[in-house]
Length: 293
Image 1 (cartoon, rainbow, N blue to C red):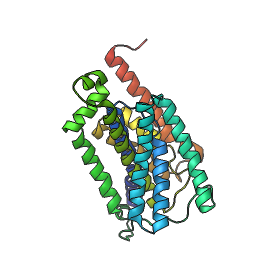
Image 2: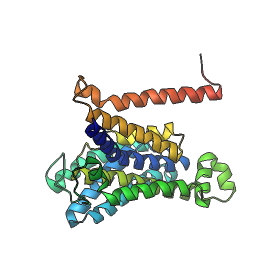
Image 3: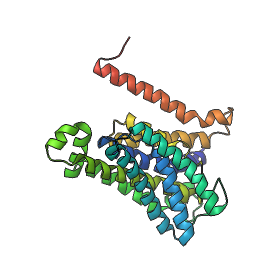
């Protein structure tokens, strides 16, 4: 039993990184007033960029940088479309996500003659241990970057720049009257949120040692739901992300004990997400006195 608990904890830690990275990205862009439902695409784009960079140079560090830059560029493009071109945020997010999914397969076909996955990716190799938990923690660079991103976002939102960012999301007119350049603030917030998502994409690629066209598995959408549940607060959002990661880890660890169809097991996190969102929405409506009975 202790072995299963250790495996469950290791899997939860491993899976929490992309959730938390995307969750922090969602917090940044939502606080700035830019809705971005394309975080799933940001994970895919950053993962592909990380794989191409690492395979081309043989360096995991280059792959890490390429993934972060790719995620930042993707979300910056979304910000430009929404802020500058006045494209509807929902339309832009859906279109970019579809483009990322289809474009990833096209890029794999052109670069590696495969529509599903890339060759082996050199990752950031660490300690070799028999312990499942230590094998996860043996990726010190990525876990360190993820932990640093958590601290950075939490501190950033309390600085002068963070106050300007939050002002843009709370009241655009008041922020502009106070001399804040709303458009520019929203653009750099979008780019920074994409860079945060990029850490999640890089982690998945290095964890699996390849890029797979379907590797994101809806994690970007679940991270967005976690940000909603956490009221766009870093701490609460990360707690929700950890909960989703724990659900996914539990279904993998104990799937041999659950006499259910594999398809039903795979949709458990999404069913739980819908239930939590419905519960949270009802709670907010009750708090505002606007629930129809």
